[in-house]
Length: 497
Image 1 (cartoon, one colour):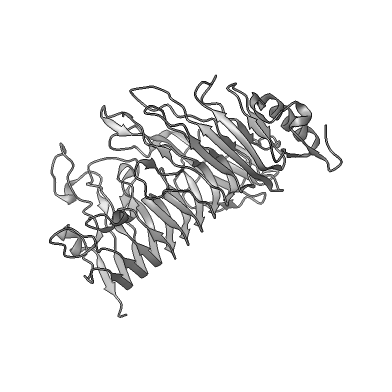
Image 2 (cartoon, helix red, strand yellow):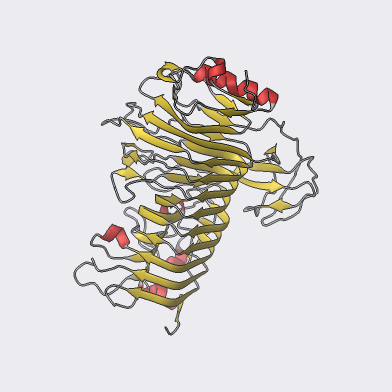
């Protein structure tokens, strides 16, 4: 079953690699054997493995080298469109922990696990991220993920207070890193027809094992037609820690629409990279084509993550949907038409990067445009709206104080700009200059117009903006906001050049 080099091959378990035969059963058997014997797996470099239509999942618990092998995924007719093709998993059993309560930013607990663990806690009696807009919903249960060390210390700051904990899961961290390397995957896109609602596809690689690195993987999307439904992410990390995606090539998806929860048409988000409840996510050297093509959806989404680094990447966007906390860092990156999106708390740093979004930083309005903490922008270049005619707003935010998102909402406490060039050469007629902020206080259609002080869920404004080395193609100085009332609340300090 193995070679003298002690690795497992798919061919030893019946795979043909001819691109026609269904090789997934053999692939599953090969990984099962490798997991049981602690052996690595290596595919045949010149093979094309067809992964078939059956609802089978190969469980990967050892290093796997797909090198230059090709994998065909035909999603035109499948048994279960939500069943992953691969799951990178730990063989360590979960631990039982008992934690009765937690407070925000708690750094130590009395519990002593046998191993360092990724912990997920939940209080089902409270709901957060109560979404507003065309995809409105009633939110999700309050929960947090963090790493709990054997000495009881916590890594990944607790975001919320927990007077009660209704659920807890503890997954031990494998000490040895697992590396998934290479492979060229091509997905023949689904043609699912469904007029109302989302129906996400998950024929993908799911990572639930902490300390996992995916290196040099390539994924293409082919055969998209006039109909189809979105993908959750070809590489998807869930409920784990210390995940790295390095030097991967990913693909954007065609934009399809549906009838959303508000009863109106809405575009469906479809992703190639996805992370939920991950502590320490690193995306390094990853890239894609056509980052300015607005017919393609942005390539990455994350939810509930702690400490995220995007470095040396070229992607159509970076997004943290339902919150990120700790350090959210964008370094030496190029982000395309969907730009940089964020909500959460901590320190957001954007440095040595070029961005093409409508705002340099868009604070997502459907989750309250909230960032509790500071933003630092250093040595960056911004081309608003990909160079189209556009009134630029550096920070995009919208929160009129009329919706309960489940948490208090605020602008960043302080914004520091130290070196930024704005290409505002394509500006509208009558242009007076870029705005540092959009108007967050705008009243939405159908809402009662109340003075800001009387709105039930007030939006806390930024306190201070520091400007140094901010230049524009138009030569015009920046303005604060079209909302004149913000000038009374925000201090702008422009240092001499």
